[in-house]
Length: 322
Image 1 (spheres, rainbow, N blue to C red):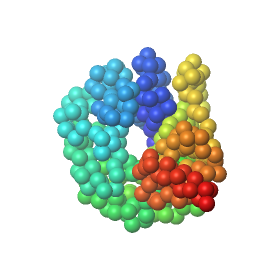
Image 2 (image 1 turned 90 degrees about the vertical axis):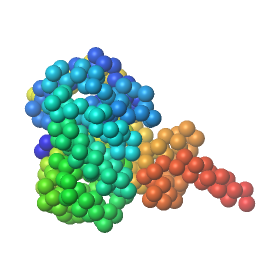
Image 3 (image 1 turned 60 degrees about the vertical axis):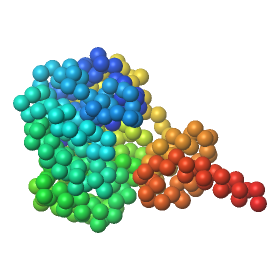
Image 4 (image 1 turned 30 degrees about the horizontal axis):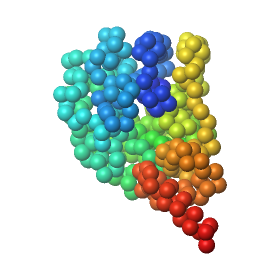
């Protein structure tokens, strides 16, 4: 099973993507020597709008600082909705290009995203991956459409991201095994990014190989968006993880992953983490939050509507006044 370390990229959500540079350099020095880790994803490439941290807008200067002349194990992510679509904004194949570029895309942009990813592969010489996020709210028809579109210009990997941490591969394994076969047949390797909102990340990881998946992700202490990811320390085995654990000990304050009962609710109902953050800010109790989340349409679950909770509270208040 290939392994992508997403501590710096997905874990960046917990620190505003503002990793101390000296720490990041030490982190790369330790992880690039771990044979079980195939790629270390360091952040997003030249994006803006959501975070001010440097690792949300990785550029050539930061890549060179971290790569130390060898970028083969370094990965970056881009979101097609936000990313720079000028190929010249990316390192060329004859320069210091990352070894892996992963692109996330909304379903309505798949055709354009796959075309861009194909051109990006030619320009950079990097391995490429289409990452389909919010997979728990996709229909079978939508998933098959994505795979069929990718068949025209197959990336090296096609990834499913369990963004809301709600997938159970014990009960849904037959469907995902079928998708893995289809991905393999189009010439890509199937991958799975596991979140842990409902405590299933490691359980699902143990099933990936038999379902046909060849690559997955992990982060120290499961650090990541919402309630986090598959824990890297549970996946890297043997003495190779000793230096990694020592680095965690030295920088333990950077790896805090706060629990959230609201995050368990969003995972249970396959809903965006932003609603959990909003519920905390508004002082909702869990019962009210659960009732609100159950009422959301699928489109609202994946696309945060900051006014939906306010409307719900207004309606609930009106009912109470009658």
